[in-house]
Image (cartoon, rainbow, N blue to C red):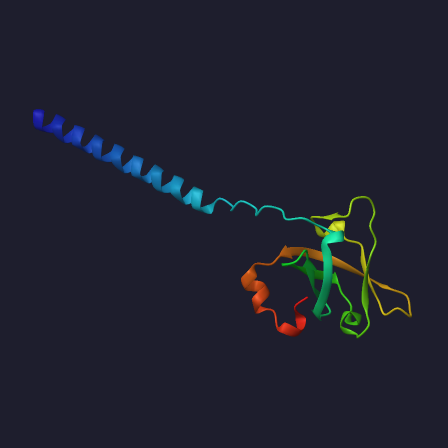
Length: 140
């Protein structure tokens, strides 16, 4: 009889340990599947913007302060961005602090005809490695 009780206790202990390990594994999987925290928002002021380039109709590189570069992916770009003599027009309404695409009101102009509105869909502060990967003729 004591052998049966010992066997029952051993089985219960094995089941409890297996259940605890399974719960730990599930918790670890849930933690791994949890979305990563959003990167800190990086903002800049339009008054710190000191140049731009455009490698194609849907991308802008903005030089901000002395060493920062921001990449703007455009929802509505323009081939006029690559024309010689074109310039960007930025309209400021309220604060000139830029933290998201909606903060920008941009258009491109050749100086002779009407300016063409362009709309940013993303703004990304580039890392030094990403900046170094930009071809020299497109670095702002």
